[in-house]
Image 1 (cartoon, rainbow, N blue to C red):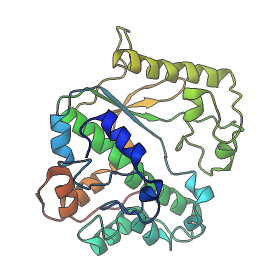
Image 2: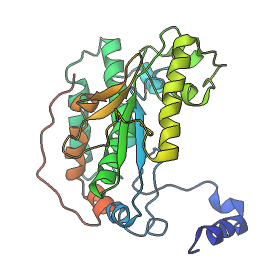
Image 3: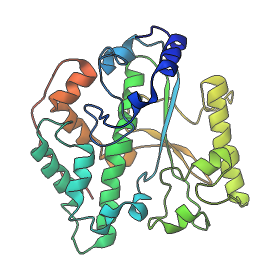
Length: 296
């Protein structure tokens, strides 16, 4: 295999396209399509070791307030979210990613749905959205920022929480919970709507200026605060593991208890998963299993 990026690119160009079509299934990936394939080649060492050995770099990692709310509109499983919850779990914590699948599935179901009635469609949708957001986006984002900080990288962790309830963007209109969701922040960074033309009002133009400044400052200086003497967005600190920067309007600032502390659940799951421990650390270092509390 190629040892540098140019020869690697040349190798890919020389391959028959059929080599990359159909039949591929990443190991330890569930059915989520945008995760690494741990084949021992592209990732020659466990992730924790690779991060430790990598050159130190600044990072800015953000999520939206409720990443998966748009799926209520487009994912057929939300037709019966309570009875289909097990299928949501299968998409992220199937037999190929956890060692004690039945326990994980039972604990996740109890945690997210234990305090809601199957007849309360709104509450059920909210809890299932929280699960998909946490398992697919939030837990990985928090894991990443902790890993960066662990090895001396300066990382900025944030959540985009602004939502214009008067928005005419089709994606915003259709979603039942009027909160920032996956890609709803796109138009404020890049000036283009997700499904329709973006025609920002006065307030939204101010939001655009704010987030564009954060992004541009990070690109230029490695710090979203730029050269401002007042550093409102503090770097992530492992001694305050749930502290993050809440991006909103008219004010933004540091906030506590990211996603209401729900993500400790995933730490418990991963600590008990031999497969997860081997992928990240190269060896299992399992802890005693715990009973998870209910969410909500």
